[in-house]
Image (cartoon, rainbow, N blue to C red; front, side, top):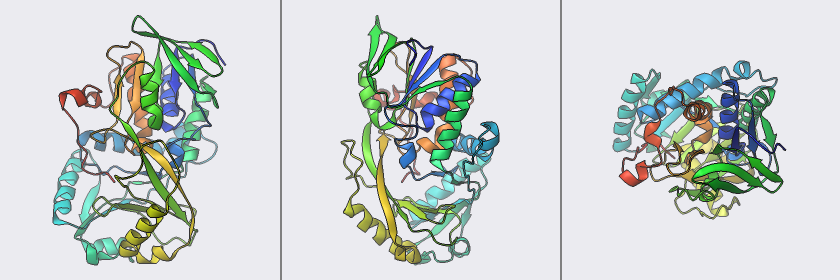
Length: 382
């Protein structure tokens, strides 16, 4: 392990690997990434793997659109020898209330301003896309054919491999135990395998972001909530798009390999960093699926798992540098959207660190917004 670095990135999920790649691509020579387990071992490797452009705020629409445009060409851009397995078969968003239909229409107006080819659908049109959808409970739907699904392990590996080719050093199974600060400036990182002198640290640890920020006495208003997912036995292709409902609280996608991956949110989930599984989740998930997509409820569950959603008060990430600690940067609090935003997280953070003009203005996602009350609320979140 190197004993000094120009930049140290903590966390080797999609965000950390993307930030490392983008910095190295811009010519930064001495970058070290520290990961306490293996590459993609945290929230990225436990996510639902869907990516979408259909958001309710203009900034998220822009981030989502640019991220998907990157993913469309990720194998070529990153010169990946395998395949990120991008299945671009759309997101079908379903609504069960008139209020949600009204919100969908507002969202689509914003999406069209951003050049996103989304559209409202009648229940008959939605049923043409997913024939076994139970429309008796629904009011309408929205659809974007450009949304889709990737393999999170291959995608993160693609960024990791590209960054390594550019000279980035990755230290896996290495835990950060402290960050050294002198005169309000970062001067080094302490790990269980030694000290690394550096003047720049990036916190990209998602579920453990609060713990890392506390090492430099920076308080971030986040908490990590368990989020559970299950996967079924594989069957022949029967569903193209991701089916998602914000009001009914579900997302369901058939993977390229035939298995169905599905999840739902629960405000009562524990916030103590546990990633165990529960019977309550699988029971509630089964009830929801039986109501909306009855045939899928008959499939056998192969396994279930959990990851951490690192939540902020407005369910939006924090892209910022610390006000009082020079050299400490944060890309945290993604609230379940970290994999979706991965490519652009690397771009905007590299621009912030290097003082470049931003590709997308994410200044409103600063840490100070929680003190001033200038929150950026996203209406379209499960």
